[in-house]
Length: 338
Image (cartoon, rainbow, N blue to C red; front, top):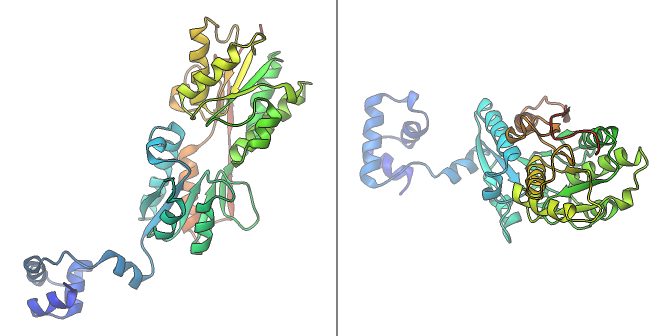
């Protein structure tokens, strides 16, 4: 069934049928109803969207490449805020949004088949097959939380400086037994081992920032203990903290890569009767809604990251990159070392 079949049945030109579906303002109401009635009788649902995309050379949609499964993305508070910002950006540019999540064995294939005009890549590591697939498509793209690289449009915060501010805050309170909690079963039980195993820009930058701040007061980075859980959620933070808090010489301060992990650290401390912050200071990163009012953390503009990424992708006159501000938010989970 084609547009020509409908045109013949309705006794009109193919252009009239096309206008009836795509440009109804160009035909009278009576004529459009006649065309739609003929189409319905023939079982014709309208122009094929793939064929229409090929003929126009554009899809009207932005592809968002995520570094994890959709089920994980929709449970992660920072990602939810980021998605809201991407959606707001697409709405302001009257564009659709296609989600391209991580699916084992189909990562690059999903990128190759996505009907989009360009991509926003969120936390995708260098050398990832999906990044290579985007480059092969030769479509414009913007990286979010990527290593700054010449010629690449990107939206970032200064993760290293923000992480250092957390370490400086904790050490200024007198803490010298400081530990770190990371997500996703990160390799390495000490600072250097964790940094050597890290491959995402955010992890590398934050570990480097913590190292800078701790070494500035004479803490031996090679002896800083690191623990991780199976994911980046609260339960993972609880599991990782258990390994640190059950040590004979337990830390007096724990810094987590994300707020959800930090909240899990507080849960683990409560289970052991360890008072926060009197006996243990805890700090996170992100300032998600659950962090208020008690968790010391770094505030970053997740939603604005999303909207700025869409703007850089679609605005021909946009600057190459954007560096967004952060703020250290000191709350009740950190106090002087016991």
